[in-house]
Length: 408
Image 1 (cartoon, rainbow, N blue to C red):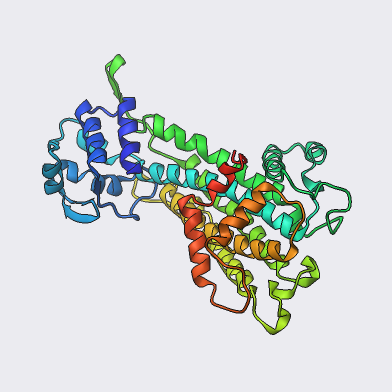
Image 2: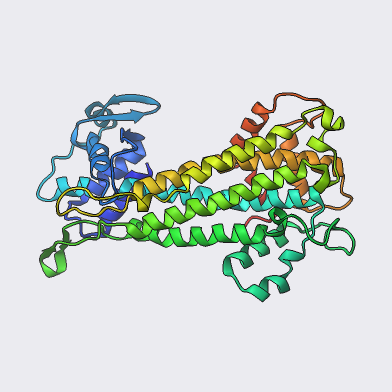
Protein backbone atom coordinates (compact mmCIF):
# COMPACT_ATOMS: atom_id res chain seq x y z
CA UNK A 1 0.00 0.00 0.00
CA UNK A 2 2.84 2.36 0.80
CA UNK A 3 4.48 1.65 -2.56
CA UNK A 4 1.18 2.28 -4.38
CA UNK A 5 0.76 5.57 -2.56
CA UNK A 6 4.37 6.54 -3.31
CA UNK A 7 3.86 5.98 -7.04
CA UNK A 8 0.58 7.89 -7.07
CA UNK A 9 2.18 10.76 -5.17
CA UNK A 10 5.12 11.02 -7.54
CA UNK A 11 2.89 10.80 -10.62
CA UNK A 12 0.66 13.55 -9.25
CA UNK A 13 3.73 15.76 -8.92
CA UNK A 14 4.03 15.85 -12.69
CA UNK A 15 6.81 14.90 -15.06
CA UNK A 16 5.74 11.28 -15.50
CA UNK A 17 3.79 12.00 -18.68
CA UNK A 18 0.64 10.12 -17.63
CA UNK A 19 -3.07 10.85 -17.66
CA UNK A 20 -4.78 11.73 -14.35
CA UNK A 21 -6.76 8.49 -14.59
CA UNK A 22 -3.65 6.53 -13.57
CA UNK A 23 -3.32 8.45 -10.31
CA UNK A 24 -7.07 8.09 -9.76
CA UNK A 25 -6.84 4.33 -10.34
CA UNK A 26 -4.07 3.93 -7.76
CA UNK A 27 -6.31 5.77 -5.30
CA UNK A 28 -9.33 3.62 -6.16
CA UNK A 29 -7.30 0.43 -5.69
CA UNK A 30 -6.10 1.61 -2.30
CA UNK A 31 -9.64 2.48 -1.27
CA UNK A 32 -10.93 -0.92 -2.41
CA UNK A 33 -8.11 -2.80 -0.66
CA UNK A 34 -6.62 -4.24 -3.86
CA UNK A 35 -2.98 -5.03 -3.14
CA UNK A 36 -0.90 -6.35 -6.06
CA UNK A 37 1.52 -9.23 -5.62
CA UNK A 38 5.01 -7.73 -5.59
CA UNK A 39 8.24 -9.70 -5.01
CA UNK A 40 10.47 -8.31 -2.27
CA UNK A 41 13.67 -8.93 -4.26
CA UNK A 42 14.50 -7.90 -7.80
CA UNK A 43 15.68 -4.28 -7.81
CA UNK A 44 19.15 -2.75 -7.67
CA UNK A 45 17.88 0.74 -6.87
CA UNK A 46 18.10 2.36 -10.29
CA UNK A 47 14.29 2.32 -10.38
CA UNK A 48 12.43 -0.68 -8.95
CA UNK A 49 11.65 -1.79 -12.50
CA UNK A 50 10.57 -5.41 -12.01
CA UNK A 51 8.87 -4.71 -8.69
CA UNK A 52 6.87 -1.74 -9.98
CA UNK A 53 5.96 -3.69 -13.11
CA UNK A 54 4.43 -6.40 -10.92
CA UNK A 55 2.64 -3.76 -8.87
CA UNK A 56 1.02 -2.35 -12.03
CA UNK A 57 -0.23 -5.67 -13.43
CA UNK A 58 -3.72 -5.68 -11.81
CA UNK A 59 -4.26 -2.14 -13.11
CA UNK A 60 -3.73 -3.62 -16.59
CA UNK A 61 -6.01 -6.60 -15.91
CA UNK A 62 -3.14 -9.00 -15.26
CA UNK A 63 -1.23 -10.51 -12.34
CA UNK A 64 -2.58 -11.28 -8.87
CA UNK A 65 -3.77 -9.19 -5.96
CA UNK A 66 -4.60 -9.68 -2.30
CA UNK A 67 -8.14 -8.57 -1.45
CA UNK A 68 -9.49 -8.96 2.09
CA UNK A 69 -6.90 -11.62 2.90
CA UNK A 70 -7.34 -13.76 -0.23
CA UNK A 71 -5.26 -13.92 -3.42
CA UNK A 72 -7.34 -13.41 -6.55
CA UNK A 73 -6.81 -12.78 -10.25
CA UNK A 74 -5.89 -9.16 -10.91
CA UNK A 75 -8.58 -8.61 -13.55
CA UNK A 76 -11.25 -10.13 -11.28
CA UNK A 77 -10.17 -7.93 -8.37
CA UNK A 78 -10.55 -4.81 -10.47
CA UNK A 79 -13.88 -5.94 -11.93
CA UNK A 80 -15.32 -6.83 -8.52
CA UNK A 81 -14.38 -3.35 -7.24
CA UNK A 82 -15.84 -1.67 -10.31
CA UNK A 83 -12.49 -0.15 -11.29
CA UNK A 84 -11.73 0.15 -14.99
CA UNK A 85 -8.72 -1.53 -16.56
CA UNK A 86 -6.03 0.82 -17.88
CA UNK A 87 -4.73 0.54 -21.43
CA UNK A 88 -1.41 2.44 -21.37
CA UNK A 89 -0.73 5.07 -24.00
CA UNK A 90 2.42 6.94 -24.99
CA UNK A 91 4.82 6.95 -22.00
CA UNK A 92 2.47 5.38 -19.44
CA UNK A 93 3.87 1.84 -19.62
CA UNK A 94 7.34 3.13 -18.82
CA UNK A 95 6.00 5.39 -16.07
CA UNK A 96 4.31 2.44 -14.35
CA UNK A 97 7.62 0.54 -14.22
CA UNK A 98 10.35 3.16 -13.91
CA UNK A 99 10.09 4.35 -10.31
CA UNK A 100 11.56 3.67 -6.87
CA UNK A 101 8.13 3.31 -5.26
CA UNK A 102 8.75 0.02 -3.47
CA UNK A 103 11.93 1.21 -1.76
CA UNK A 104 10.37 4.59 -0.98
CA UNK A 105 7.17 3.10 0.44
CA UNK A 106 9.03 0.61 2.62
CA UNK A 107 11.46 3.33 3.66
CA UNK A 108 8.65 5.64 4.77
CA UNK A 109 7.09 2.88 6.88
CA UNK A 110 10.47 1.97 8.37
CA UNK A 111 11.10 5.59 9.36
CA UNK A 112 7.74 5.81 11.12
CA UNK A 113 8.43 2.52 12.93
CA UNK A 114 11.93 3.38 14.13
CA UNK A 115 10.88 6.88 15.23
CA UNK A 116 8.15 5.41 17.45
CA UNK A 117 10.38 2.59 18.69
CA UNK A 118 13.19 4.96 19.65
CA UNK A 119 10.78 7.10 21.66
CA UNK A 120 9.65 3.98 23.51
CA UNK A 121 13.23 2.81 24.04
CA UNK A 122 13.94 6.13 25.75
CA UNK A 123 11.12 5.22 28.14
CA UNK A 124 12.42 1.68 28.63
CA UNK A 125 15.86 3.12 29.39
CA UNK A 126 14.24 5.28 32.08
CA UNK A 127 12.70 2.15 33.64
CA UNK A 128 16.17 0.58 33.56
CA UNK A 129 17.55 3.74 35.19
CA UNK A 130 15.08 3.35 38.06
CA UNK A 131 15.69 -0.38 38.36
CA UNK A 132 19.46 0.13 38.41
CA UNK A 133 19.33 3.34 40.48
CA UNK A 134 21.57 4.90 37.88
CA UNK A 135 23.20 8.30 38.03
CA UNK A 136 21.43 10.87 35.78
CA UNK A 137 24.39 13.29 35.72
CA UNK A 138 25.32 12.38 32.08
CA UNK A 139 22.04 13.95 30.90
CA UNK A 140 22.46 17.12 32.96
CA UNK A 141 21.86 20.02 30.50
CA UNK A 142 25.22 21.55 31.39
CA UNK A 143 27.02 18.32 30.54
CA UNK A 144 25.16 18.05 27.24
CA UNK A 145 25.85 21.69 26.32
CA UNK A 146 29.55 21.18 26.98
CA UNK A 147 29.67 18.87 23.97
CA UNK A 148 26.98 20.40 21.78
CA UNK A 149 25.97 17.35 19.73
CA UNK A 150 22.40 17.92 18.45
CA UNK A 151 21.30 14.27 18.46
CA UNK A 152 22.68 13.76 21.95
CA UNK A 153 20.97 16.92 23.17
CA UNK A 154 17.57 15.79 21.90
CA UNK A 155 18.00 12.33 23.38
CA UNK A 156 19.05 13.76 26.74
CA UNK A 157 16.07 16.09 26.72
CA UNK A 158 13.76 13.14 26.01
CA UNK A 159 15.29 11.13 28.87
CA UNK A 160 15.04 14.05 31.31
CA UNK A 161 11.38 14.58 30.42
CA UNK A 162 10.64 10.90 30.94
CA UNK A 163 12.40 10.94 34.32
CA UNK A 164 9.80 13.38 35.69
CA UNK A 165 8.79 12.27 39.18
CA UNK A 166 12.01 10.38 39.90
CA UNK A 167 14.03 10.65 43.08
CA UNK A 168 17.30 9.95 41.25
CA UNK A 169 18.19 13.64 40.99
CA UNK A 170 18.35 13.92 44.79
CA UNK A 171 21.85 13.87 46.35
CA UNK A 172 22.89 10.36 47.32
CA UNK A 173 20.05 8.66 45.43
CA UNK A 174 22.18 7.06 42.66
CA UNK A 175 24.27 4.09 43.77
CA UNK A 176 27.38 5.06 41.81
CA UNK A 177 29.19 8.12 40.58
CA UNK A 178 29.90 6.35 37.30
CA UNK A 179 27.66 3.64 35.87
CA UNK A 180 28.44 1.19 33.06
CA UNK A 181 28.58 2.86 29.66
CA UNK A 182 25.33 1.17 28.60
CA UNK A 183 23.58 3.40 31.17
CA UNK A 184 25.94 6.37 31.19
CA UNK A 185 25.94 6.97 27.43
CA UNK A 186 22.32 6.29 26.44
CA UNK A 187 21.86 9.83 25.15
CA UNK A 188 24.96 9.51 22.97
CA UNK A 189 23.83 6.29 21.28
CA UNK A 190 20.13 7.18 21.07
CA UNK A 191 21.31 10.54 19.79
CA UNK A 192 23.26 8.90 16.98
CA UNK A 193 20.13 6.98 16.00
CA UNK A 194 18.18 10.24 15.93
CA UNK A 195 20.85 11.70 13.65
CA UNK A 196 20.55 8.70 11.33
CA UNK A 197 16.76 9.12 11.20
CA UNK A 198 17.29 12.79 10.37
CA UNK A 199 19.57 11.72 7.50
CA UNK A 200 16.94 9.33 6.11
CA UNK A 201 13.83 11.48 6.38
CA UNK A 202 14.61 14.20 3.78
CA UNK A 203 15.80 11.58 1.31
CA UNK A 204 12.48 9.73 1.57
CA UNK A 205 10.51 12.98 1.38
CA UNK A 206 12.34 13.97 -1.80
CA UNK A 207 11.28 10.72 -3.48
CA UNK A 208 7.69 10.98 -2.23
CA UNK A 209 7.24 14.55 -3.42
CA UNK A 210 9.51 14.75 -6.45
CA UNK A 211 9.61 13.43 -10.00
CA UNK A 212 12.03 10.54 -10.45
CA UNK A 213 10.94 9.69 -13.98
CA UNK A 214 13.34 9.19 -16.87
CA UNK A 215 12.73 10.79 -19.25
CA UNK A 216 10.96 13.64 -17.50
CA UNK A 217 8.14 15.42 -19.31
CA UNK A 218 8.45 19.21 -19.01
CA UNK A 219 5.01 20.18 -20.24
CA UNK A 220 5.44 23.92 -19.75
CA UNK A 221 8.53 23.91 -21.98
CA UNK A 222 7.20 21.31 -24.43
CA UNK A 223 10.31 19.17 -23.85
CA UNK A 224 11.14 15.63 -22.80
CA UNK A 225 14.62 15.27 -21.27
CA UNK A 226 16.74 12.26 -20.42
CA UNK A 227 18.02 12.37 -16.83
CA UNK A 228 19.22 10.40 -13.82
CA UNK A 229 16.56 11.34 -11.27
CA UNK A 230 15.73 7.65 -10.84
CA UNK A 231 19.07 7.14 -9.08
CA UNK A 232 18.86 7.05 -5.25
CA UNK A 233 22.39 6.71 -3.80
CA UNK A 234 21.74 9.20 -0.98
CA UNK A 235 18.77 7.15 0.19
CA UNK A 236 20.83 3.95 0.09
CA UNK A 237 23.65 5.48 2.12
CA UNK A 238 21.15 6.96 4.59
CA UNK A 239 19.44 3.64 5.29
CA UNK A 240 22.80 1.89 5.58
CA UNK A 241 23.67 4.47 8.24
CA UNK A 242 20.31 3.84 9.93
CA UNK A 243 21.05 0.11 10.17
CA UNK A 244 24.47 0.83 11.69
CA UNK A 245 22.95 3.22 14.23
CA UNK A 246 20.39 0.57 15.18
CA UNK A 247 23.22 -1.92 15.68
CA UNK A 248 24.77 0.46 18.23
CA UNK A 249 21.42 0.90 19.97
CA UNK A 250 20.83 -2.86 20.02
CA UNK A 251 24.23 -3.58 21.55
CA UNK A 252 23.70 -1.02 24.28
CA UNK A 253 20.21 -2.31 25.18
CA UNK A 254 21.51 -5.88 25.34
CA UNK A 255 24.32 -4.79 27.65
CA UNK A 256 21.91 -2.94 29.97
CA UNK A 257 19.88 -6.12 30.22
CA UNK A 258 23.00 -8.06 31.13
CA UNK A 259 24.14 -5.58 33.78
CA UNK A 260 20.77 -5.66 35.55
CA UNK A 261 21.06 -9.44 35.82
CA UNK A 262 24.46 -9.35 37.58
CA UNK A 263 24.69 -8.74 41.33
CA UNK A 264 28.14 -7.21 40.85
CA UNK A 265 26.61 -4.28 38.98
CA UNK A 266 22.97 -4.10 40.08
CA UNK A 267 23.19 -5.06 43.78
CA UNK A 268 20.17 -7.26 43.06
CA UNK A 269 20.07 -11.09 43.12
CA UNK A 270 21.81 -12.80 40.19
CA UNK A 271 19.31 -13.53 37.46
CA UNK A 272 16.82 -11.30 39.30
CA UNK A 273 15.45 -14.33 41.12
CA UNK A 274 15.12 -14.82 44.86
CA UNK A 275 16.97 -18.13 44.48
CA UNK A 276 20.14 -16.55 43.11
CA UNK A 277 22.56 -18.71 41.15
CA UNK A 278 20.72 -21.98 41.91
CA UNK A 279 18.04 -20.93 39.39
CA UNK A 280 18.21 -19.57 35.84
CA UNK A 281 15.97 -16.61 36.58
CA UNK A 282 15.99 -14.16 33.68
CA UNK A 283 19.49 -15.14 32.60
CA UNK A 284 18.39 -16.15 29.12
CA UNK A 285 17.14 -12.61 28.51
CA UNK A 286 20.75 -11.53 28.26
CA UNK A 287 21.69 -14.33 25.86
CA UNK A 288 18.63 -13.70 23.73
CA UNK A 289 19.35 -9.97 23.55
CA UNK A 290 22.98 -10.61 22.64
CA UNK A 291 21.97 -13.01 19.87
CA UNK A 292 19.41 -10.58 18.48
CA UNK A 293 21.96 -7.77 18.53
CA UNK A 294 24.40 -9.88 16.51
CA UNK A 295 21.67 -10.49 13.94
CA UNK A 296 21.29 -6.72 13.65
CA UNK A 297 25.06 -6.39 13.29
CA UNK A 298 24.86 -8.65 10.22
CA UNK A 299 22.14 -6.43 8.77
CA UNK A 300 24.43 -3.45 9.37
CA UNK A 301 26.72 -4.50 6.51
CA UNK A 302 26.30 -1.67 3.96
CA UNK A 303 24.29 -2.67 0.90
CA UNK A 304 25.54 0.42 -0.95
CA UNK A 305 29.07 -1.04 -0.98
CA UNK A 306 28.07 -4.16 -2.89
CA UNK A 307 29.12 -4.71 -6.51
CA UNK A 308 26.38 -2.83 -8.31
CA UNK A 309 27.38 -3.03 -11.98
CA UNK A 310 24.48 -4.16 -14.16
CA UNK A 311 24.33 -3.90 -17.96
CA UNK A 312 26.39 -1.83 -20.40
CA UNK A 313 25.39 1.85 -20.02
CA UNK A 314 23.56 1.00 -16.78
CA UNK A 315 26.90 0.59 -15.05
CA UNK A 316 26.09 1.75 -11.53
CA UNK A 317 23.30 0.98 -9.08
CA UNK A 318 23.02 2.00 -5.40
CA UNK A 319 21.20 -1.11 -4.05
CA UNK A 320 18.65 1.09 -2.28
CA UNK A 321 15.89 -1.54 -1.87
CA UNK A 322 18.33 -3.88 -0.14
CA UNK A 323 19.51 -1.10 2.18
CA UNK A 324 15.92 -0.25 3.10
CA UNK A 325 14.89 -3.89 3.49
CA UNK A 326 17.82 -4.57 5.84
CA UNK A 327 16.93 -1.58 7.97
CA UNK A 328 13.29 -2.69 8.17
CA UNK A 329 14.42 -6.15 9.28
CA UNK A 330 16.66 -4.66 11.94
CA UNK A 331 13.72 -2.70 13.37
CA UNK A 332 11.77 -5.91 14.01
CA UNK A 333 14.76 -7.46 15.78
CA UNK A 334 15.27 -4.28 17.81
CA UNK A 335 11.67 -4.54 19.04
CA UNK A 336 12.48 -7.96 20.46
CA UNK A 337 15.58 -6.61 22.21
CA UNK A 338 13.44 -3.82 23.65
CA UNK A 339 10.98 -6.45 24.90
CA UNK A 340 13.79 -8.33 26.67
CA UNK A 341 15.04 -5.16 28.34
CA UNK A 342 11.52 -4.15 29.33
CA UNK A 343 10.77 -7.49 31.00
CA UNK A 344 14.14 -7.49 32.76
CA UNK A 345 13.82 -3.90 33.93
CA UNK A 346 10.30 -4.53 35.26
CA UNK A 347 11.58 -7.48 37.31
CA UNK A 348 14.51 -5.45 38.65
CA UNK A 349 12.17 -2.55 39.41
CA UNK A 350 9.91 -4.84 41.47
CA UNK A 351 12.90 -6.13 43.43
CA UNK A 352 14.32 -2.64 43.94
CA UNK A 353 10.99 -1.12 45.05
CA UNK A 354 11.99 2.55 44.60
CA UNK A 355 10.18 4.94 46.92
CA UNK A 356 9.90 7.62 44.25
CA UNK A 357 10.10 6.84 40.57
CA UNK A 358 9.50 8.40 37.18
CA UNK A 359 5.86 8.34 36.10
CA UNK A 360 6.88 6.80 32.78
CA UNK A 361 8.79 4.02 34.54
CA UNK A 362 5.81 3.14 36.70
CA UNK A 363 3.44 3.20 33.71
CA UNK A 364 5.68 0.91 31.66
CA UNK A 365 6.16 -1.46 34.57
CA UNK A 366 2.39 -1.64 35.12
CA UNK A 367 1.76 -2.27 31.43
CA UNK A 368 4.31 -5.10 31.41
CA UNK A 369 2.60 -6.68 34.41
CA UNK A 370 -0.65 -6.87 32.45
CA UNK A 371 1.16 -9.24 30.10
CA UNK A 372 3.93 -10.83 32.16
CA UNK A 373 3.62 -11.83 35.82
CA UNK A 374 6.65 -11.36 38.10
CA UNK A 375 9.13 -14.22 37.93
CA UNK A 376 8.75 -16.27 41.11
CA UNK A 377 10.22 -19.56 39.91
CA UNK A 378 11.92 -20.66 36.70
CA UNK A 379 9.58 -20.91 33.71
CA UNK A 380 9.70 -20.52 29.96
CA UNK A 381 9.79 -16.83 29.07
CA UNK A 382 9.38 -17.29 25.31
CA UNK A 383 5.71 -16.34 25.15
CA UNK A 384 6.34 -13.45 27.53
CA UNK A 385 8.88 -11.96 25.12
CA UNK A 386 6.52 -12.56 22.20
CA UNK A 387 3.62 -10.89 24.05
CA UNK A 388 5.65 -7.80 24.96
CA UNK A 389 7.21 -7.55 21.48
CA UNK A 390 3.71 -7.74 19.97
CA UNK A 391 2.53 -5.00 22.34
CA UNK A 392 5.45 -2.84 21.23
CA UNK A 393 4.66 -3.53 17.57
CA UNK A 394 0.97 -2.69 18.01
CA UNK A 395 1.67 0.57 19.85
CA UNK A 396 0.15 -0.61 23.14
CA UNK A 397 3.36 0.21 25.00
CA UNK A 398 3.61 3.62 23.35
CA UNK A 399 0.30 4.47 25.01
CA UNK A 400 2.16 4.58 28.34
CA UNK A 401 4.22 7.51 27.11
CA UNK A 402 1.18 9.30 25.74
CA UNK A 403 -0.77 8.74 28.96
CA UNK A 404 2.01 10.35 30.99
CA UNK A 405 2.48 13.14 28.46
CA UNK A 406 6.09 12.15 27.78
CA UNK A 407 5.88 11.19 24.13
CA UNK A 408 7.69 13.58 21.79
